[in-house]
Image (cartoon, rainbow, N blue to C red):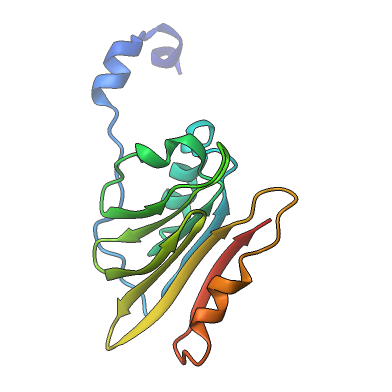
Length: 157
């Protein structure tokens, strides 16, 4: 206790010693999705970092990414798929762990559909942002009729 009261550590020393650490291997039988309406990622990057560190998802689906869509932050062990939006609050992104392979299947503004290889099968994962006072883009969903793969969506209206 005496050391805590008398010891002094400068902020620069703390910053030098502090290092972000994330697990390198996500060993789990299940795939974990995190769905997040970030309402402008530029002001919620710390929240995203806490969520990823806490839950260790393999796939994160974000809607309402905003202006940061063109300069997404680098996160260790993850890569981004993204699509810009029609307004400053729009845009969608999918953050995928490096252990998974993916392919973009279809994109238009505020709409992203990706195919992700999981073990021996492929699933479709999508994200949609619907601007205020607009209807969901049903014409894009109709392209998926007859698909037997699992569809996981994050639709934000």
